Amino acid sequence: MRYYLIAGEASGDLHGANLMKEILLLDPNAEFRFWGGDAMLDVSDNIVTHYKDVAFMGFLEVIKHLPLILRKIKECKKDIEAFNPDRIVLIDYPGFNMRIAEWAKPEGYEVTFYISPTIWAWKKKRGWKLKKTVDKMIVILPFEKEVYKKYNMEAHYVGHPLLDAIDQFEADLTFKKKYKIETGKVLALLPGSRVQEVEKILPIMGAAIDHMDEEVHLLLACTKHVPRKVYEQALEKVKNRNIQYIIAETYDILNIADAALVSSGTATLETALFKVPQVVCYRTSTISYHIARSLVDLEYMSLVNLILDRPVVAEFLQNDFTLENLIPELADIMGPKRAKILADYDELINKLGSSGASHRVAEIVLR
Image: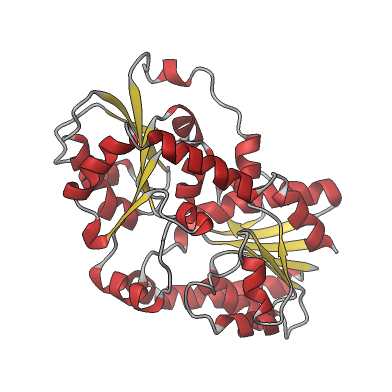
């Protein structure tokens, strides 16, 4: 069969790649066409658009790039018509993908939405729209199946695909030697995968490092889609020059880290699954933040706290993301709070269940 997949972010690219691999096991003659990134390109070279060209953060950025986004939606529809897939799989990226679903279902395409829009957090009326425009809804958080019952819609809970990605991870046994890490603690810095995130978040992460009492190895998780100069400019006021810039080796960093400063998003759950105590950080433009807070009905922002429904890890968002808050919390997670956080992570992992989500998704898509 022919499969058209759309992923608009780094996390969706990872999950899309694992799904494609599982589809090939069930359908060896599968043909793919997709919007995604490097991970999906490792499976197939039939890419339409790389996610780095369509990933925008915050309301202002979306409004600023709205003409481009609308043009891309139009291009996507034409490309789907030309490819004529048997299945369309929309992976997260709700602003774009819901527009495609609205068009595709009436056109006669079978639409699967993999990783639900967060209708439990904001714009809850989208649930009724999804009921009309999606054939199969696949959810990855334990509580989401119940959410869809309110809309008289069946949702398939498959577990979280990050469990698959981490299960498949093979640690680089030379990693410590490569980066000259012999003794001492390791602090991971994960400032996000977009330029806007790095510019807003990394300067404060860097400033906190200058106030640490003990010497630690500082490993900055970089993505090749953010130019090195963006990281350097964000850290230009930091006195500590022992930061190592490491590209596309985030899992190897987390595998040896003792603690982490993490931008809110999928990376918070990845960090927890590697059992690394963390502080969750986030900052965007003032207007974007206030618009989001007025719309979002959530007590917590990080996936760790959301899934366990309690404050397991500290979240410092927007005006709370300050040195005064960050410095003592960083010291705590590397000391007195460490054992409690690790115990909570065990509960989280148990709640998420077993790996194999990508295989279960492939089976649902092929039905």
